[in-house]
Image (cartoon, rainbow, N blue to C red):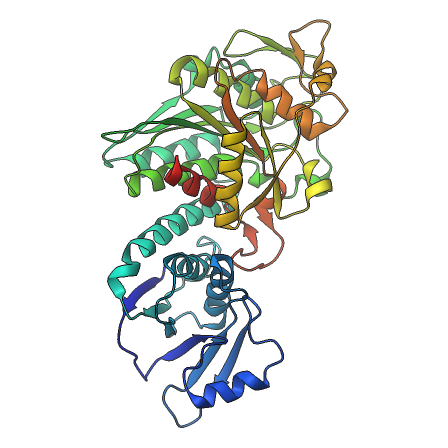
Length: 462
């Protein structure tokens, strides 16, 4: 992660960046008046200054000047810089702390590059020139922790499935938690998964056996206990109900929920947040093999209830059901938040940048919506119609996992069956926004790390 710092002194040897609409000098003001739309968020105009210092001035559009506008400006700035560039961003006097946080997040997130595929990591230095450095230091810490969590989630999701099997993913969690005060990681495998019928069934067809990971952040003092549950299918072929080639192309991203949950939990520890967090990651590869579960099989879950499944490509809800049963029996949280690349159906209504939110707790739903809006991760609350429960009726088991009707809504209703006595719960179906086909503001092509930023904002206020 390249360096962002604070300073009070301008260096004429470096590139200067000023927000469009704020005049650094009369010369820049004249240039601004000639631009057609100088304030569009994220747009950057380069003003060369031959034989003068600095040699370049960049004008960065901030839109309405809110946090999102400054985040977009940060992403635009970093893409206008070379890998080894040095630049100074001139902040207007008295700029709001949220704007500086947004700017820093945009710089770090827009500068992300998947490190395994890159020839070298970015090494640009960016200094924020402020009239009061101490005022912004804490907000830079928040931005840094948020960016680090999102980079981790992106790295894990971008990692090819040839490397990223359940054992490898679990090992990453253990390594990241090692030696960090207040963090503990537990990994279950083999015979210890006997009660995890959904996880064992989904992972049964792969040569890479499943894992179940519990990562706990336990601060010295806390008033709330939040369980974060993330779907962790390290690759999804669809199983015996095999996906077509194009639908399988990006299925290394089917653990994006687990990656975001992991990043947010590590950030809670880094920031020493006074909220207890338990992250539960059911990890499996949904492959085709002699031991793969079949359409029509009946699966017994952690809580003892049974599911009839007629579609092995509706596997995510099966592993999450076990994780939720474990959460309600062993963890007993105040609140459960599920992040899952669960269905592609919600993208038909909500598009590529918006996740579906399901919850019966208005306060929790409102808090997540506010956190997502502040973080730049959109969501839209969808209903949980009681009459749709009939679609899950099975003649041979407690429920049916994969009816053909209203996929995203019924998947959420299915997960509700495993919430036990926890009334404060929410499910975020975030398959579509977990991946970007091209650069888009602070998102870079590939995995977006969607959800990590929202969860951190939510935990900050929990």
